[in-house]
Image (cartoon, rainbow, N blue to C red; front, side):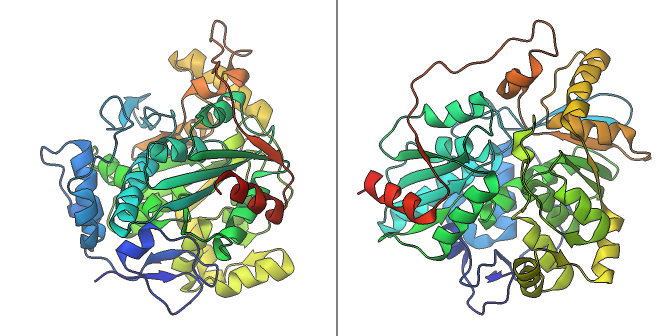
Length: 442
């Protein structure tokens, strides 16, 4: 039976039923499986399955105990059309995989729609009402809200950094006015939101179960691995992937798939001015700096949470790395791990002016408008000197960033959500946020 263990060595292991509703481990590590029921994801076959049914086979292959949760469950009820990703050829070796055709026009829907449905089913089974806590740099929050807004078993709190996401991204969250949805604008950075969320998850101050739908939750990885399994089956040869990277969950999912048989050669992680991942991949040293606002706000992150699972995979224990990070403000991989990291991963940084330039360039070349995050992965994909196809992951619809794109592309319409909003603005103090949550859901 698959069991889930902490990246930092805590001895308690969880079952699939437990990991559905888990947050951080007691030692503040992340959960990941200690074994798999399948050695090679490449052996899975699509046959004549719909994308949703194919995803169910992947969940069950990764842990057969997921079967009773996914077999008769609608995993993508928020999608108006088929959730199957859209592939577009740009030239002989470059392909774009569009993952923004879900309810919030972001790739986050691909993992959060299934996770929300499974979490709701598990809570119903337990006869409990759960409290979901999410920190977002722009897209996770709205996807999480859409996944659980109609649940009878879940209340949700989303922390977003005030004035550091696009108006469209904010209103996707704050215009969902329901009794079980509470949005908080934090007067700080995404990293402040994430820090507070992790502290609350580690020391639950509420008299109810608290749940993470962030990439902290292992099921997020399962949902994202699924589209990489699907993707590799569209090609007869191995592929490279280029991914706009903030919290590293998408890139980790590609790595996890690669580690379990998927034919992925290189994993390219593009960053904006918050280039912590670029510096980490180049040096093996994680050294966060001050988070800077950018035109690609979903990458405005200096402490990528999902990186911890990769560090565990390389080092077999992440505790000493994160102890060094806590005490010395930087964590360092061993030399052997650094070599492995550079062999598989690469990165490139794009400042705001370069991102704007690429939006115009790719529109001129392909008559397609890409969002500020996707253009970074597309540039890296086009520039790589590789004999195998390279897939640039398109993580968001350009509509979400019309505030950036409209001044650059003639006649590109400004997208607005003209609806009432409901949110509170608070300073980044954990106790104040806790009291506000208690008052809202008393």
